[in-house]
Length: 488
Image 1: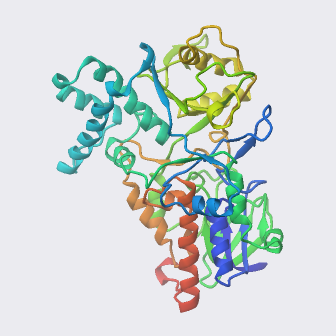
Image 2: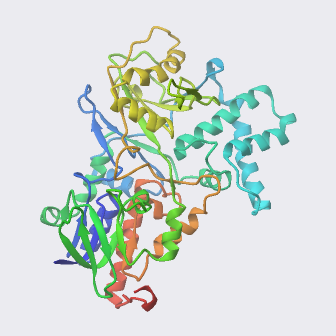
Image 3: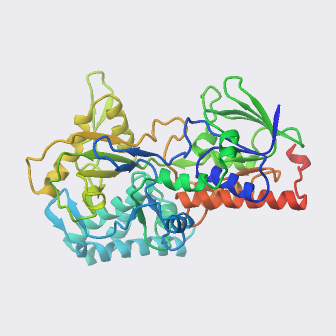
């Protein structure tokens, strides 16, 4: 059985950063096991089928926390990443109003609503949790006399749009107590859109590891099936399908928490732990909830919308209707304006006639399924009326290509990132337990293990890898590694 000082499960940003810092700290005897046939995890850059040199990021797209982002700083220093500040001109459009909806019609009330929600739970921490949609109902009912018609109509649509397209879940499911707190956590600076593709940012990190290491110590299509830490001296791993076995002194687990949360033993991605995962973490895993933020790419032969706007926002408070088919089963019928949308204008960003649209659950999964079945016309049916309003033209051409992100159906992701639904445990408790790990030799990394503004972001994954490498190096140098008798 091959033995390593440290084995890292997962070759996303957190796993790679862990390996880099261990290597620079003198620990070269490490191994990265990645289940996919590629590195990067939820970093996924796809070349445009029509526009040479244009890349679409179907996963992470921005450097967030622009004033404190180590990946952005490295990119500037190396000078090999093209980026764009996409916070210029933007326009809001509504299902119920012609033309652009001016922001003065809702800005003040949207800001006050966030403040109201924060004050509500500060004054009464034991107040029952509710959805963001219900929190709006409470606020608007209490202060209806101070709202005008524009504010009543547009403010809830804007609140819904920002929360759904930031957190990837429907506002009638998101926790007002936890999600609005997270949504109000201001990022540290502007967001910077990456034109070159996030894969190049990942390559900048990989280049810190020698080619010899990358060739020998990164294994692709290496899915871990069993983790046995019953031996106080060594942790044993086995790959799927009765595959190769490894042992190690320290283990860093960076797989998405969606995979860690799998409890069905017949699931192909289920990981068997021996002994079972300790109670604090196993109990918290049950409460993990994941959203599904996705992207849809529409490519055209020519641009028919305003070229100099960075973004277009589609506002709505509509919901899909449920119908009954011939078999007596209910089915959801999704139409245009059933969900809010954010359009990124690649004509402004890349000078090519394309739009990238952010989507949320359940729409993201619905679109993935449509495209898998070859129904691109039904996807276009959802967005055509919105673009007709933006273009002020009912005779717009159909797209030449439609792409979308794969996260709902991607077996090693099963969603985008963690989120807080109504009644969920405070994510701070989950983060704390994952940061502690257990037995001081099994560690956890990944963007969901961060509790600050970097949570859910690529640089958060980077920070988590840095944290875990530092903890292991400290343990190695001071001989701190102990196995508690009660954990054996």
